[in-house]
Structures are given as C-alpha cells and as structure tokens.
Image 1 (tube, one colour):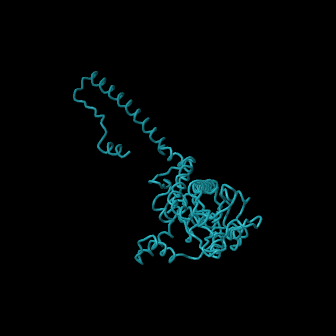
Image 2 (spheres, one colour; image 1 turned 90 degrees about the horizontal axis):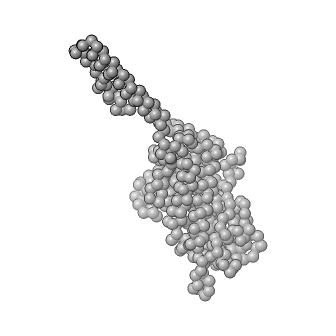
Image 3 (cartoon, one colour; image 1 turned 180 degrees about the vertical axis):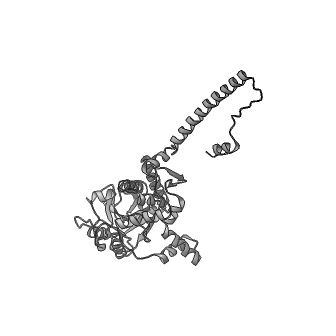
Length: 363
C-alpha cells in the first residue's frame, strides 16, 4: 500500500510518535544520536500559523494540545479525553523507485527524492481541497469544508531492515482553519475514505515526474514500476516485506489486520547507519547479485524506445548492401567467363552454406 493512515489517540502517544519520527535510520553526522530526520511544514493551516522550516518538538506539542505555537492562543478545545490529536498519513515510494534512488548518482538521487516530496505535496493538497471537513454548531450538526490542513512532514529513507525505502510521514493535526478565520477539529472519517484516492494521486504525480525526467516506467493499473530495476533486484531489496510475509504464513494471517500483526511481530529496533556506508552497502549488494544500474543515457534511450544496438543494426545493413553488390559482381564475372570460354560445365554457387544461414538467422 503506497498511502496508509493511522490515528494517534492521545497527546502522549503523539509525543512518542514525534520522538520516533524525528529520527531516521540514515544520518550524515558522526554522532548516531544526531540521526535526525528531515522535516518541514505543509498545508495552508501551517501557512496561516507562519510555521516554516524544521518541525520542532515545541511547535509540534503546542498543536497537539490545540494551541497556536507562536502566540499560545487556543485554536480548538483539545482537553477532553475523546480528542484525537492527529493522524499519520504515510506516503511510500514504490520499491523499484527506492532501489533506483539508492543505486543512482548523488545528483540523480536528489532529483528522485525531490519528485517524491513534490508528489506528497500534490497528494496532501488534494486532501485539503476535497476531503477535509470540520463541524460546528450544537453536537457538530453543521459540516463544512476547511480552508486548509496543518501538516508536519518527516522524510525517511530506509526500512527497518535498512533496505532503501523512500517514504514521508505527513502528520495531519486535528486543528484546521475555517474560511471565517476560526479554527475547528476535523471529521476523521473523510480522511480514511480518501486513503485510496490520495495514494493514487501520489503515484500518478510521481510517475509523471519521473517519466518527464527521462526514466522508463511500466504502469500497472494505478501503480507503476521502474523499468531499469529488474524484479529480482526489487525483491532482494524488500527484506522487510519478505519477513512480514513469512511471519504471516507461519501464523496463518490472511486479513489486513493479520498483516499488521505480522508487521509488529517482525519489527526491529532502529539501527542508524551513516549515509555513505548505506549507499556503499546497497551498491555492493546489487553487484553481488550481478546487477549494475544502466547509465543515465541508456535509461533515457530505453524510455524513448531507442534500441541500444542501433549502431550494430546500421553496420549490419551496410554489410548486407555490400554483400549484394559483391553478389552481382561475381555473378557477372562468372557469366562473362562462361560465355567467353564456352565451359558449360562450370557452375558457380552464390548461396550461403547452411551454417552461414543459421548464423545470419541468429543475428
């Protein structure tokens, strides 16, 4: 599933979630304790609150409790026990995209990751524009569309088994601006109903962006995969998925809930690794499997349907033309010789031998 949604049912649970999301298995500094995930703000609600830059714990907790992080003024009534502070909408790139990202050059990696993040933005904007509602009035009898969503995003790069896995956690706060500049809580049911659609919007945007950049893709219904990554390589970098499938088989899980239990049974603690070491390990693993990513020009030619052996085909065509000329020349000489000497018993065979014909057919 490319887009998934889960609720954080209490402020304390959401604070624990922040601690988890604010770390990444992929870090650039020498100290593993500083393995911070890249984060930012998204949505028109965030713009109204002038939230920009990295997501800090202080701002995150203020919104969980229903307060404006800048002024401390209350936005919504968040004190009752039934108040859900927010929902995590996670967008995960197809595995072949993540593997392509991991094995590409640094310049190409940045472009692929930028395409992923832009696709997430387009998908959450679709949620804002079409599936975000609040209630007001006695008992919440009046339902109306909100003016925007308040979203904190955390960008991660790996699975728990340290395979490449680009994914973004978009935490949607249960506090949204109305068109009259007041604030209200969200109708969560609409977000859950939109899960399949928002995933499709994300995939379509990402596929289009990668295709425009010259990558060859194979579309499969509403999903797609990168043609440059063979299926067996994609599978080899899906250890987390394999572990879940094996656990599900061992315990007889077949339902979506069962798969969640299998995921929990196989969940490992985070194991941060330095970024350069991860890329080296991924490259080494691919080489051990006998795979080398085609260079950028080859990928572009493949996406445009240009055969890689075009120069060979031209050479073959030239050779065929030359062969026909020689054929005519030898035939003329033979006939002239035959006519001049009157040697009726002379025969000249210009047909290829059976072996030559077989070789030509293989070519």
